[in-house]
View 1: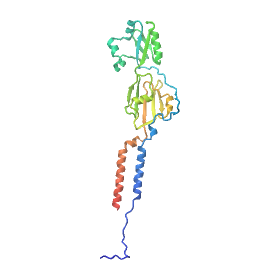
View 2: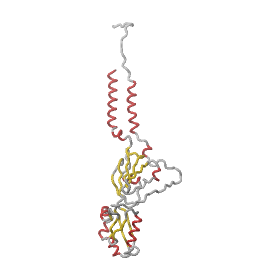
View 3: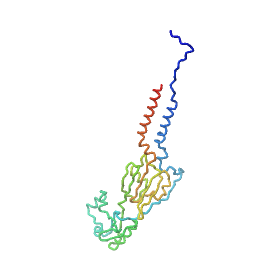
View 4: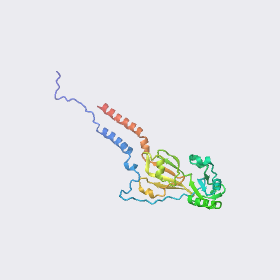
Length: 275
């Protein structure tokens, strides 16, 4: 039997306790969790609307569009003189049936505003329409048509109302609008709404004008956009949705996760070896 003297002390080293290892790993993981989370308020549109029982009305600041060169107009002139009306409109049976069935035919058979600002209508001749509103163009065409017809009815539609939505939307691209007005919310809706990486507080509207390009900064989370000059879009407007600042971090999250996993594994291995 082995007797161990009380005076003999065994020199046993206890393994160092890595108390800071877990704290270190947690301190590296927590920023990833916070950055990768999206707050609810970042996803809400018009969050500061009044919740009172009565309805709130916002003034409609819809800008009046003035016809520009290379715009395409749909024009029809009607009167009791059907023969003259057909001559002006140059309508045939097949053409009239297919006109509204094919979107391309609207552009092919529409009236393009020339670089000098005129359109050429059979019988009526050249009529200046540049820098006029659609209603002003109707009055100008009606005045010319009344020289040949009695009580002519004139219909004018702008069929080249195109706009573009780019940036953080689900379906970026150029779209055509056949409505008399279009809001920035409708445009974003046509583009499939804003993605999870889109910044709803930073939406830029670029509008080409004769003097150059003017811009509007919109915060879609604020109801003030309802009174902004950029809320209603005009033809050729471009809507750009900026990305959130953490997009680059979120894109690289898999790589960061791999790095953190490797670090955590290394810490565990070191703890095991030191024991």
